[in-house]
Length: 524
Image (cartoon, rainbow, N blue to C red):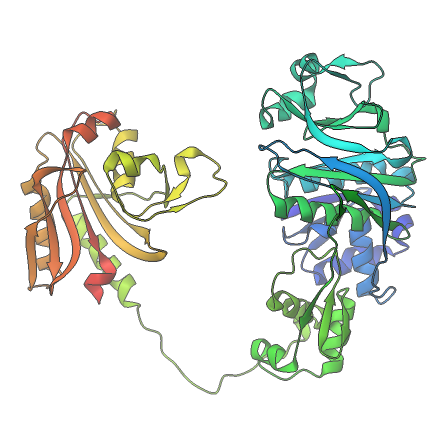
């Protein structure tokens, strides 16, 4: 949940709503609201970033209460020229204008919303960052391009020019976000050659927004196109409420930003399939209107600011919110059923009991691993890579449990031996998820014979009689000291001694034997 705070008096003055409405309706929208001194504190799920702003929550409550209704917002086109020569490390950039926004005393609320979007959708400015400028102070044409650290600009809140290299060392914003850019930095430059922003770090004082500002230029840049586009739409629709107008510009010869209404077909049948009973179309329509949609002839028009709507089921959820979950009828099912254990989970439980008998300790690890180990271990499996990994140590989805077991041994090399571990977890091969048992033994006495004894014992304890142990070959294991396991002529696992070359590269000084068993294949 994302927590937002509003000055109660300012919120009531801006919205024209009563205290009761401000504290009641957020609960009906799927959030929470409470008083805290002179503030109203609200919490919303991350899927409704439009509600984090004073404009957004006002619009949502007034619409829910029937004070306002959906209307298609007019988009004006202005022939103001913007060029983009983006660096490859932050390649996405867009701009938009809000005229008649009348900032007045809402600067703290606007900045708070900007930072909420930075933290959520922008992932602390990694995916997207926002710049706000007083449009009257911007001299067009402007361009988005790299600048060097030898150039100068006037940081926001200051009056004197400084060298960018000094700014990057001394200013707190540069210290906080300087790691998002390399030596050369993205900049926005106006017609006079002045730097009006250094995204994603800080704007220049040249285009400072004040209480007298009426027209705003909004820029958003970043590393993720979806995040950049969503951020721009959210900022424009918030800043243009209640009486402002949105305008597009010409960016590299094309209209920007892209602002399109989406429509969704919502039938009584689709509502009934989820709800369990028929709902009159009039009630569906009134529910969607309360939630801010336009609705006509079975089609819902999604407001621009609802960037969270990606499927029909999202609109259906809003139908139920509009009706009120407390008003939805309870239905008695006309059948009786008895639950039973899932065969796969039953097998996993049995294996855990057996592992205790073999003096093995259970470990739990992430399904994300370092892709470099695929080459270290000689795996040829088709893997799934993470596009924007948080860490290089977790940049792909594992195709085997062996890397996780080896990582556990590496992390615990200072602990006493023997180390006898097992894990029951998911692996992903060719886009398919499988449940696998992995066993690892790190000990001076660890050998092919020891790991073989455990796996043969497991097969016999499970009552599997028709199994076969055959010679196998894998780069990770000592030649001649690895075997495959087959049941009814189908390979279900393997075990063996890890090659000393692999142990040396991992910094593990004890002999290690590993093995894996495909639980799903065994169950089937």
